[in-house]
Image (cartoon, rainbow, N blue to C red; front, side):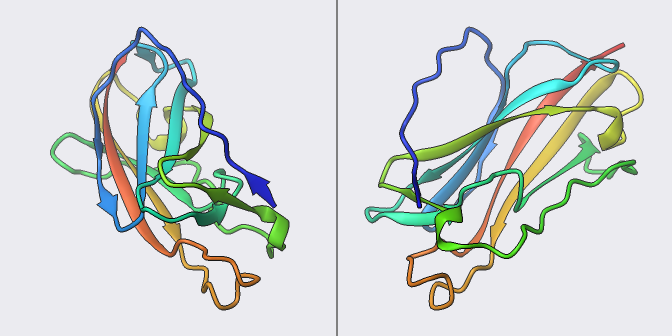
Length: 159
């Protein structure tokens, strides 16, 4: 079983993030560079934060259970060439991370914009969703967080 440790990350780059709350957990995303170019992967920091007053468990590999879709600012979806796998292999007890209140688990994705369907410069919306459907009664007796949390990030893409 892994224990998540809070980490402070300092960055001079700001981006707009709108975090949506779900009881007990919040997801956030931010760009790690101030400019996004069509021909370069974009580093995106993604975090899930325990907003409850009790410890919770989440699946420890955030490469699973997070979906990402791009759209125009008016909400028109873009056809994607690649959709990230969100189903994890059958878990063991050690695959879950304990998040104390106020602690987070984070990852960085180096995301290809073309895989998201972004093929031209302009402004776009990136929608992230973390979804966990583990039944705590079946998850090795752990208090596994169950639900959905989402966030939206706006990105400006240069040629």
